[in-house]
Image (cartoon, rainbow, N blue to C red; front, side, top):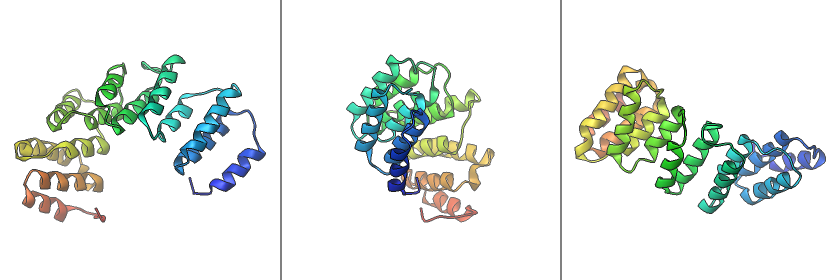
Length: 219
């Protein structure tokens, strides 16, 4: 992760122990440095040696797929070895995120619906893959009314989907929640609020949020 990939490769080649953690770490290093072809080679060799393929290995691979077909293959393999349908929420979330990244909304939603006990990441991603801003807000409202966990990423996702004059009131409702639950001090949420107000034609409110920010970044 520090960009010292060559050093990591040397250590890996010199210590090729049959430990899935070491191999997963090498795969992660390649994915982190955008060397997905090398990550795939290590993954294939890992399987060929009969090493354990766990949820962390598959989640790491999903983070670097460049084509949805590759993601589908990992999805199918995950189903085959029984890691989905509530066994690994982390992996299910990663598969849902992968489909969402490629715009395969129907497949992403299907994965979400197959998770029996969803966590905050699941609901946050469900908001992100909503068909439109109204659906995103409805999912957000469901989370609030059901006392489900909501975090800054959930708020950024729903705010990013709100746009147009017809959604002004909904945007203000999300803003009210941010204020009530103390998210006014979170820079990413404030940036999302400013952007949202700009998209619904509320420039003065956008300026108010900006002026009230405790810390500002370049965004």
